[in-house]
Length: 116
Image (cartoon, rainbow, N blue to C red):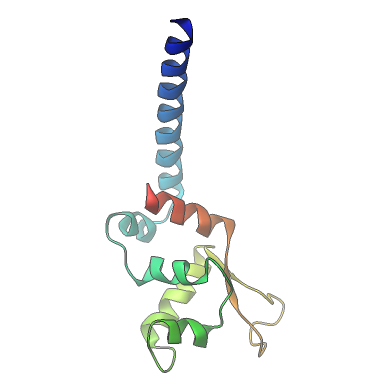
């Protein structure tokens, strides 16, 4: 009987702790990210595309079925970088021909929040 009570309380505390952690993380997120939690857009779609392997701007554009990087995609990539959800694979040389974008730990955390 004591083990059942223990497991119940442990599960309850874990759930409370998890909800509090999500609440704290959401407070850290900029306004655009909080909006994304209610309605997924291209903002999160970009993160899903680069979660497995870093991609160049052109490769991301092609993954969306575009022939070239659109103004909208360019703005989204800039915003994701400003929010520290993505980063350059060669940060020292932004215009390097082999430059790609990869998701950061913060970006992975953001995607985990979207799943919950």
